[in-house]
Length: 443
Image 1 (cartoon, rainbow, N blue to C red):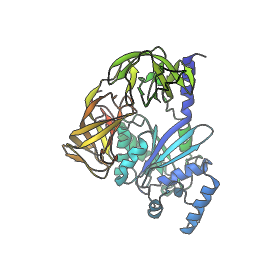
Image 2: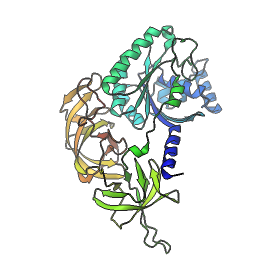
Image 3: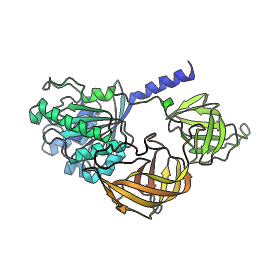
Image 4: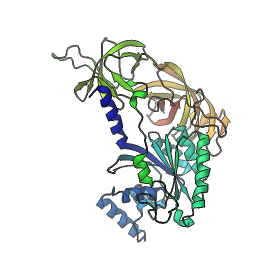
């Protein structure tokens, strides 16, 4: 088997893992949907189910409240809402899943950004009685900004509208048109009743007019992994290995996780931000030398030349290397309670590199309810999404977020206490109105 054949086989095997996030307005039944998905797919341990049954009985409910499988905080159970992101791992014979159950309230938009930032699919829940509401549009806009490639519209509580096909069709048509205006490429609409279990794991006996997949069937079959050889190679250095032993007196290896693309022995590379060039002399994966490695493998790379390389540098192919700059503009979601203001000094973390930076401007603020732009707000408050212009103390090699979600993203950190302030996407821009919020302005 050639190295390229091995790469293809591994890329296909990677499709067995799907990261997805759920979002929905308050009381749309999102936690119940997730609980039903876990319960009916036999992904709940006996003691977990027993604890949920006991808690439900104490609250006067005869049937177990499956929402309690994900709403783990005391405040969530008391109020009956989701507050923080709840991560759950489960598996079926066809695929493994990492689920991020995100809050639906507007106050916790930042939590949805956290949960959806690494998702390959987003499930947006809608109450069939209410249809597409403001929060539904907000969640769709966030999914577009984060460039989540697949979106599922789960029209829930179909049992409360007598499983009527016209109700589902009208909601699906409205949401799909709105999603298309945001630049979301793929939407799959599924009518469900999370409480009754219709079309969640098992097909519904009440909606014979629907011939599409159940939620779980779609999650198991949606294609989500691209060939890693199509992405530009990016290798952020995390640690420099210098054993200096008698056996390896001159060994210098660079350890880290490949963020994207493929690295090959003999490949001409450039180390950024210094711009020095060399050739890959060796690649080590789990103590074994290989000729080729790909994202997201953790590797140790050796170079043919003795270069000054440290944590935070990025090794990239010499051909097609990203530009190095100290002036960064991007779209951000502010996650801290204290605002982000013009002139504020922050730390900017990009992959394994952290540098000092200053906020030079906040050109615009995006209103997610109607996608209108507010010019020069001067600051961003918690949950705000807007544009920022930054100046860094040291040069950075960022890709556009449109090209790489890993190397096009960054964090702004408070230098005083290390608090995460803002999550950013380099180069992303939004337009006023419904002009394709997920599209990059310079593309």
